[in-house]
Length: 378
Image (cartoon, rainbow, N blue to C red; front, side):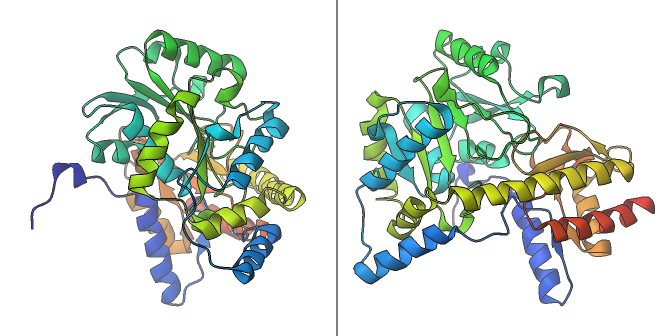
């Protein structure tokens, strides 16, 4: 049967690593998971309790396309707590994970063939979603001394710019002055700004800054997957300019109908789980400190400061120029699943690896011991 050129996207390599790890576990091996950005913890207790109560109360059918009004209001209140922003709940759109939000954003903002800039290294699915929508993903080679983040001078000639802070895989963050400079450059060039903020809430030495603190002319995308520990629930949100709400609503009605009702109910509960979620953050903080110290002691080079999110990006270029083969060998030899840098940077990723420290501290300690043993022999 025929297929389109738009369908010829690259694989999401981390998912391939996850499948290889699953197969190894099915064969009886004990695998330490450091490959996928997924908390080991379940959805917060308040989220699960809210869903149980809702299921007992009646059926969970379609919601309106923009999402449950109560959830949109509670997300607006979150912006007041986290950033001091007075946000109109009408600008909040509930989506089936951040992935659906990116589909809606790219469709709403760009014509086929237009160029959208994104930093490398960066989240690989941006590039593949853009390709599937007949858009051109323009890679901006991020520099270590600039946090691998795009700069205002990179905006020229772009229809859109995607920024991520904290970033995946580097964990680097943008402060308010840097975000303001990017927003100003985008406005001057009629370039749409999209701010990926799905790791907000997970930061260690500096606060997360929302693009909404510096401009309203932005699409902000967030998710319950990371800080709120709800990856499999596929629930996220976006904040759009007031004059784009109806544009997004029409697209969402036709593309998704609505985000899962059950997940929306759980998300309402999750927004009340502050103490439990801050406990998760302390686990990430301990894991980060453990790995940064242990990897350095093992002679491995951490590329970036890992200010936020839950990743460490390693330079292994002195050991390989095939990070995919190296990741496969690490899994085979010592049972640790890690992600090759090729997933994030097609040009320089052959010499890098990403480690996730979102699992338990016991797992991170064991994973570090296995990695140390592996690299000591090389």
